[in-house]
Image 1 (cartoon, rainbow, N blue to C red):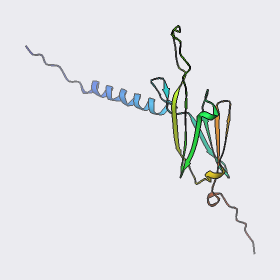
Image 2 (image 1 turned 180 degrees about the vertical axis):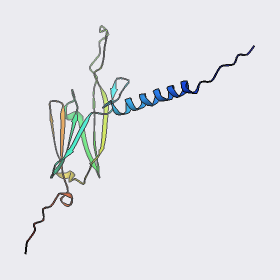
Image 3 (image 1 turned 45 degrees about the vertical axis):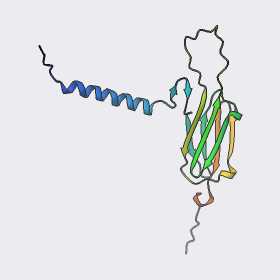
Image 4 (image 1 turned 90 degrees about the vertical axis):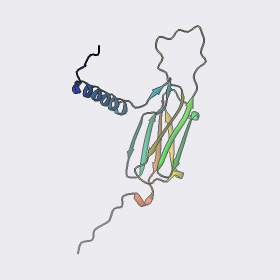
Length: 147
């Protein structure tokens, strides 16, 4: 004997709505993604002044020699790798959130920069990259003569 199951379209729409909520939550609320204990994207702030573009990246626990910075055209890339500490078999972890592994972040710069004159500082786990703007994109003041 076969039975007929009543179709309720509203029930299926709720699951689609929940899936979309989860998609937007994961895409816009997490500054980096954790996959298999690795981290892939460090959190970054970028702003510009009249003379330069400044990028700050949070890299806690990373050493300056483990980070590589490249500027290719209009794209700034920060990448590196941190090693996991040697594990001992006598430990029983109850929670493990330390990040290790390779990371990379590419950012499109908002304006043309002079990569040869770029500077970078690394202090207290924050990498600060200062990229001077190209002369042709810096604001220029034009004086007005009255007659």
